[in-house]
Image (cartoon, helix red, strand yellow):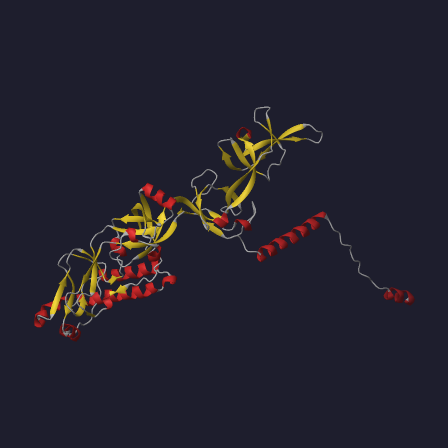
Length: 469
């Protein structure tokens, strides 16, 4: 009896390990999990497609030129030597008899001006606007390769400040009687626009222009307001008396003939983006080369301080939807005649009837739903996705025994629309383009609309690819 109990205690109990039972559900789940992890990791490692919002815009296949501005300018010289004080602002229109400057032969009136207390002076709204306009125009037109323009701008601002300061002293001109015989007020001889610089081209005509002049070889612009003490016959200022003025630019003979035939051309000034129409005249310069004379009858006062101007000729401007060149892609599509396109009886979606065969070889028909990407009005063909149909598929004409074998392909130019969260190809009709942007037609049946989001770089996506923003 005791022996039996000992035998029972000596027995060891071993845990039974169940075998791993793999079924098809576990295999599929594992495969899906691995795929999801792979997709997530692949997405995290890659840069997501960047969107671009389609906007309305314009694009011009234009040419930029640097031309010389020619005006009817009269240089006014000093009749008496003495110290100068200017009262008219550069770019200001003065009437005949208006005070432009004063000249003090002995310097006593100048000393008197410096000795009186002017108190605190503030600029009115108009004067502040003048300063802002000058600064903005300089910022828009500044070219680092022509840094000397910064010094000219400094002189122009200094001249404006000097003119405003001297204007406050006009009330003191009544004291000039104390300096009789030594003090003169100098009046404008004619109506015109005042400018305080000379460069020797005041009497230059369009026919005298050469490439050496346009390249500004040995060009020197002298600011007259830098002069404090003037000598007899020394230039003091100049008047531009006529609102009609010209810009002369170099052109090839063929282009010049075309511009002259047009008669007028729209010009955009790079300095302030102002646009104006100009008459055109082809001429031969003093060096025998071809030039176009652009004639203006307005805006001369805006550019009174400039001899050379950067301009654009707006020749073939197109307006529409503006998109980057990097967004443009090409895709191949099958061509299917319009008569073979039908609609689903349940959903109403477009598609085709394709011939199929059952397992026993009996002919049958299936409806294949497909998107329509474009339509060729000349041939009556629709463009069908190559992922939906295959080369050699036989299509059936609705309510007819006629058939059509898919065999023709054509390429469409378009972009990938991402409004719906995936890359959806949309055809575009390019009106014009340059190296960076293209203008495409708007309100097309299968194209884009303003404010659509498209893929910025078409090479980063494939058709129907999901896009996570």
